[in-house]
Length: 351
Image (cartoon, rainbow, N blue to C red; front, side):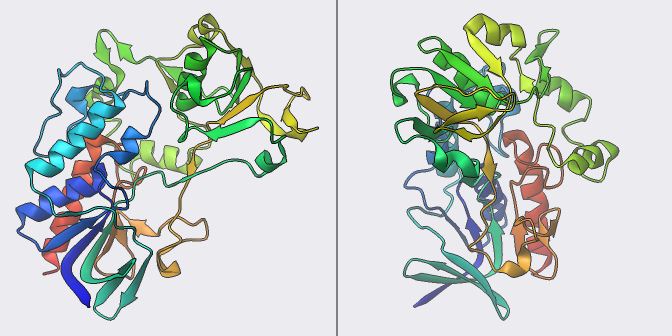
């Protein structure tokens, strides 16, 4: 039997919960679907020592402050617990262990297929997050099978790896943090271009406090700052936050050029060096995966075609929580609520 809701939200992460808050305020008939068995599961699976770059005072979803001192940098488990508390506080209608397999337009409704469940809805909000599928270079399959390879999404702590040297590929924030942790017990190289760096705090204030104070993080895609960053497509990389070259060197991390291929089963660097290592940690980011959505809403690059989260030509279909969806903070805890409120208003205006 086909179920019917006014609105279906796909994803029970920070974006899905934020839109759920506003839909509940409207008294709307909706459900939040998520493939995970618990709220915050994605955060709990990140590496053990991970902390947010934003302090608790700048990590609030609408209606519920983060339960920690404002200058505290939350751990990944504290973040997961906050999301769990958020869903419980507002009694959001969750359907966990529900993996959505397809989404297709069907007349005045959208048809959501999740296992044996068929759900029709006039509105669908896709809130599966800014990062869906781990991305690794194609040549990873050419590495010697004896080399342990894991993506940063699989890394937990140094015990995840075997004894011996480590090559961390990708010199962004994840790579730098994991590299510093590994260097305490293993010889560690960090491979990748220099993406620059900014301090985590300036004059006793978190850098994100200054970025909000100067309205940088609230700049829209249409602003000159937004156009500049969007035009680069993120190719320059996000600067390291709070990690200097001196800190990397002091921790024992050795910087090396980009990894460009494989020679004799071992990683090959841009300068021709071959790295004889026992482990490779791919900190090479994520790629979008919207293959389960009708191709009508995807561009040539696989990303959804939208304006401020609204899908052109598909009334009632929205995206939320994407990087720079509308503002520079659209994928952050502190920023996703703005877009969620905007989309909730647009849903209300259609009825």
